Image (cartoon, rainbow, N blue to C red; front, side, top):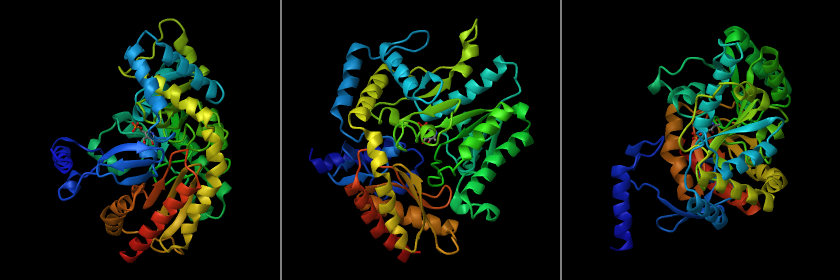
Length: 459
Ligand SMILES: Cc1ncc(COP(=O)(O)O)c(C=O)c1O
């Protein structure tokens, strides 16, 4: 078989047998499914050998970059020694070692690690833990969860109930009851009465959490789920003082603060955990993605000593588990991944270069379509607008034509993996591997400049 025949057979099978996630399969009726075959550093390569800058770390995952043999070897060694054993009643050395290391890295008294295989499972687990904790501690009425509009917290039924994106929920309703929405921290779209002052805006957004707790009845509210920087909608950083005020509110009403760090942990914001950057103490941190840089799947939650306490006594048991959680290979891989963080000072790299990343992206402000550049660390969103002065956004039809009809494909064709997303207002998102530097920022800026200039002529 020639290599072009092999590629054609692969395309046929991809179209016939593979179901891509969150993807309109009909989009590939007349075009090829992109097949990424290998990666090296900050780049990936497709089946034709074409190179792409991985400006999204796959899906906010590949912190240390692609092709790290030492991580693959750590996984292979573990598979040879003990490929699998469950964490149901048993432990294995790599899960113990990783739990201790994560507890050491985490803020405050988050000393207990419950592993999962994914971010959705981590979020699901955190909600279940909150509910069971309150049942054990004499407040059985607390089951509701607050989260922010347009925030994404995963796709399993519980996590989807916490997710704030109406469009991806309708098909699956009714969802578990108790998911309540509060405003997000999109300062670019702040309501007029707080639009001029970020601190005032942050105070208002935090106080909306208090109002929601009071409206629902504090005795019914279990937890607030917040990302340090909200991904969906295009990287909304917290206004100064926001998390401190939220922490006070949670303490006042006995509500748990869950920091959903599935994206923001493991260096994305220049710290191991986003809550460390913004100096707040969560009761639970949920994590996944970057903990292994994607060399094997793993997620989990870090839980405070206080939350663990009722589960330490008598017959109490957290009635929850999944077969592959804390898989030995994934734990070995995570440890090797964290070794690279330390050896190469990846947190230091992000902190040293984040200002340059921002200012490189800010050069795009000279384009008429670029309304807002926002984010932190190696995690940025660029909001596109029809009118910079009025901040007018695109109609649904324009957004469909611009994002799906042109931008996503054009950026990919130009050699950049990033995300054009209109789950809120239309944004392009960038989250490169933490090994990146100025030459990668320049490459992103150049591709974006060319493609966004072309996009403007098509509106
Ligand atoms: C903040 C947040 N929570 C949860 C999830 C769900 O994680 P997963 O896709 O691993 O289930 C995601 C995924 O992107 C996320 O960004």
